[in-house]
View (tube, rainbow, N blue to C red):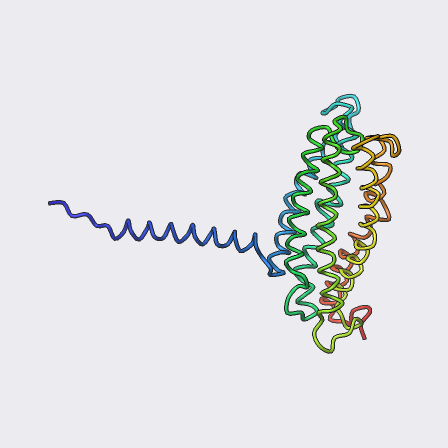
Amino acid sequence: MTAIDSSHSATSSSGSIATRSTLLGTIAAYLTASDHKRIGRLLISVSAIFAIATAIEGAILGIERISPSSSIVDADIIVQLFSALRFDLIFSVAAPMMLGLAVAVVPMQVGARALAFARSAMLGFYLWLFGVILVGSSYLNNGGPGGGNAEMVDLFLVGLGLVIAGLLLISASVATTVLASRQAGMTLMQTPIFSWSALVASISMLLTLPVMAGAMIYVAVDHAYERATFGATEGVNAWIGWAFTTPQIFIVAIPTLGVLAQIVATMTRGKQPLRR
């Protein structure tokens, strides 16, 4: 008679099931997170992934400029690639990464129990993510400003609208946390410098991105129908291109200055600016 020891196989089987359930539970916890640290990690990690694609785009454009005699891509793609690089630098990498850092750090700096409108911030993450995916798909199919595929240009405008809506929700959460969720007794003058920089950047986005959204709505309606008032596909960049250039891009650099000032103040153990 052969004896079969089933305890080891049962233990390994239960262990693998427990590992899978733990992994699925962790993924589900992040996908439905209301904790500000998890939302911040999602924003930072996903924008870091998009940074790799942005670096590839920049490398291709750099090679094209260095060697004008030999081209990697067709000449008619250069305009689309340059437009995609500008979009990715601002709205796929810099803005979400800085907002993600603010979402993760600001509630702890101001002594808030939680991020204000945390679920709205999570919704903002999903809107931003799906918007970036739609914009990327439109570029891959000859969309974007000046694109030859009219349907993909419409898809670009829809994706850009989702990106703007997502960033606005996240910015509103950060600004509300600093303004209304500080611990008792902490004034704005006592707020750490990074939280100040996050507040300034968030309010600036809340003031400027709706202007971009309004211009984009006019362009989208015109492009979907007559295409006579705003210059059709060639006019898209003329009406919303200001959001990809200075001084608009300085807004996303403000939290970076706040990080540097916070590091200096911590390392020198001195008083921070704007504090009594």
